[in-house]
Image (cartoon, rainbow over all chains, first blue to last red; front, side, top):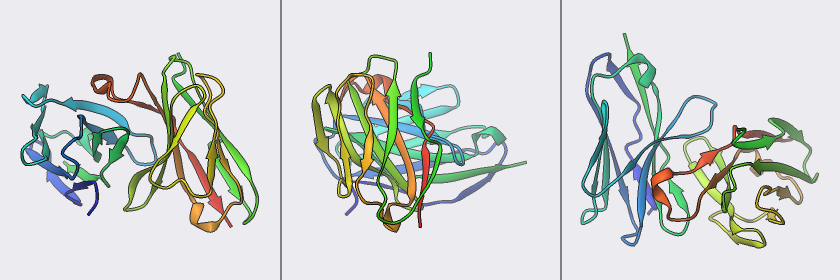
Amino acid sequence: RKEVEQDPGPFNVPEGATVAFNCTYSNSASQSFFWYRQDCRKEPKLLMSVYSSGNEDGRFTAQLNRASQYISLLIRDSKLSDSATYLCVVNLNDMRFGAGTRLTVKP
Amino acid sequence: NAGVTQTPKFQVLKTGQSMTLQCAQDMNHEYMSWYRQDPGMGLRLIHYSVGAGITDQGEVPNGYNVSRSTTEDFPLRLLSAAPSQTSVYFCASGAGIGVGVYGYTFGSGTRLTVV
């Protein structure tokens, strides 16, 4: 079993849609959690950290369920510029990445 | 503020050649790491360092060596290149393992092809 598993996608949605990504992790001792965004042929960039209480940053909402070892990312009112691959990241002693979910937002 | 700088950006090697991928950061971060990214596999950790003089293996360390003589630099050495090492390599740095709030900063990557 992979340490971090994500919906493989791809997700193709129209502008303005709401889209949700899911991620599960295998190690219950994991300490911190993130979502990264990666544009085609670019380096990953931190989108947001994920807290147990849930957190929101504009159109983006992240949730963490430690009991189920589950992380989610919700994007509301999708923009063309949201098209990218979204990486779920889990930190224990080092950072472990999911394979990513590709999102394409279409006009 | 340059952040994390990787060189070269592109490299073609012949099987059996050796080379060093360079990584430097100017943020005084303690933690540095190397990942490789292959299609459908996500990023896999090769080696990491929690400070000068300290390194450890990640998920896929075979065929690679690292050293950390200074806080700023963390080079990755390919000992004898193989076609299976064709990949995109990313260096990352962070304020420390578990310092999760700030995440990690990545370099722009090195695209390596081994023929």
